[in-house]
Length: 477
Image 1: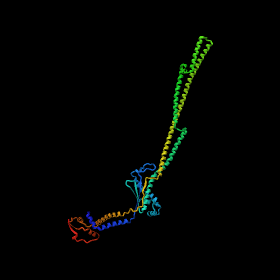
Image 2: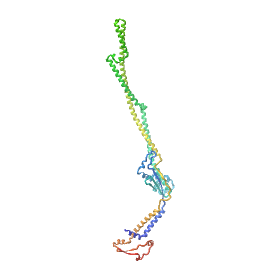
Image 3: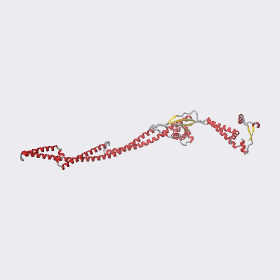
């Protein structure tokens, strides 16, 4: 259908089109004035996305997640938050609210769930562009109640966010509390086992014991070396005394008493030799000199025997001392080995005590941290601007509705005119006649276009048709 045909239809059906247009605008305007007014009040909250945990001081990782803000929107519009709003406003105790609930549901269901759903229908959550501010709006017939609900939703959201943060900490705190009791028992058992072992083996302190015993072992080893050297030397001297002349032994030659007796013997022998030249054998002086020589020789032999016996006894003493040192060294070795075994066993127990203590201290630290987190009343969310009762209603928007009704009325008017024309088809132009008869049009009598004043007169009342001479013209195709 051409535009000229549509215009011809509108011109022919102008009364119907105008009635539809004005009726649409009128009904919309009346409804805009008659509909109950709705007020919208908004509260804004700000989220400190770069905030740090007040207990640990660490950056909050959840605030850095891409879906963090979307999660906050879902939390605000959740049933949990709406139920908290119902509880804060004490809707269930309000007689008017209870009567409305009874009328709407006949007492079926829970009043808190009913009003939670009702409140969520009037809630609107909008984010701010490129910021961490969230706008919480509520629409209602009462401006004061709308502001109260917006503020209560903000408070309930902050409370819910805090609970979502502290509830896991509370559960973790309970878990660590139970674990601490078991870990404390493990530490006490490990310490009791260590103490019993120390008492059983008479260990008062393990620090320096092994060093002292090792020093004693080294000292005995050194003494054994010295004793073995002394024994070897004594045995060598005793062997030398047995194999050679005792008088030529170094011990005899180094003996001052024997050497003195030998000097006296030399002198006595000299006197005896002199006496033998002057006196006879039976002379008393000769016999006295002979007796002195014999006595000196006997004394020398006695002293040599004593010295030889002393060397043998020294060898025996050295051997006995070496044996004693060997026995002491062996006993010290066994003692050191036993002490090492005790220390190794005690080191294992000490490690068990230390490991149990470290685990207990770590659990105790986490318990303290989770306890503080569970009791923390701080959150990264705070109210930026509380809601106030609006002075003007937000809907219906009369001016916008009228403007929209004008466009909608125009569309309806055109649609109705075309629909009626389709039901009662008329020939409105040469194109319609050509399409209807399937024949070309030779000429058309075209009505001259009226002036604007004449068009208005024709629009609101019927006028007489002009004479063909003035209003019609012959147009050939």
